[in-house]
Length: 233
Image 1 (cartoon, rainbow, N blue to C red):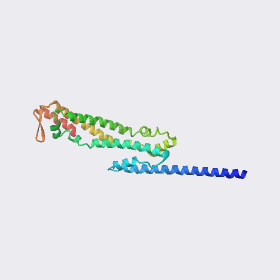
Image 2 (cartoon, helix red, strand yellow):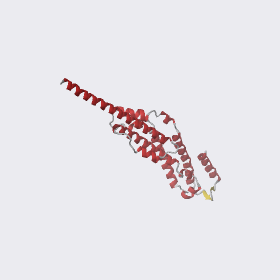
Image 3 (cartoon, rainbow, N blue to C red):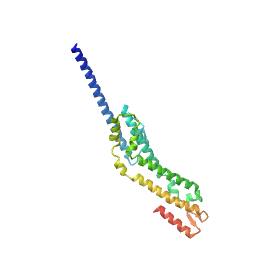
Image 4 (tube, one colour):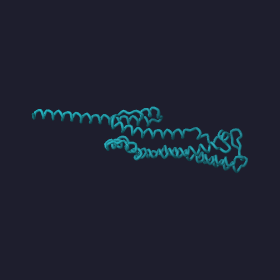
């Protein structure tokens, strides 16, 4: 009887050890898959010419299972929101209308009250300020961690997310290139807005002749030139 009990206990212990080993190697495999996925995503978004469609396809795919899938989905949701915001900023910065505000074509099309131009400038400034704020928020650990806080995960997975996926964000924070680009466009819009407001305030004092704007009053021409100089400096 004792021998049978020992055999049964041995079988139970053996099964237990097998299960422990299985879950250990399963977890290690899941973690390695997630680390590899993150590494490949880093390479994709570090390219000079990012293929947004390819990155989004990767972000919409899940390579892990169970709790690790929750970690993966949380991190990819964070990345997707960050990417979408960056793409929106890039689209604004590359909008041809920005460089057409102070052209003769726009003066002829929307002058002399510049209703559409004023509205465009106000909307772009508001959108850029919003996107800039969101961009800076996404560079904080608090924002990054908010994507996993409501997933009902054990602290181990939350710490894994923080340690292996989020990591130290200080290097990213130090890169001010995006923020500087936004500030440059905002400054350009402020200067351009002053020119447009000036022209709208003196509708009867200027005309378009050929490819040039001509002022009837030399003093106003001087004021206009000074405002333009602030734009191009």
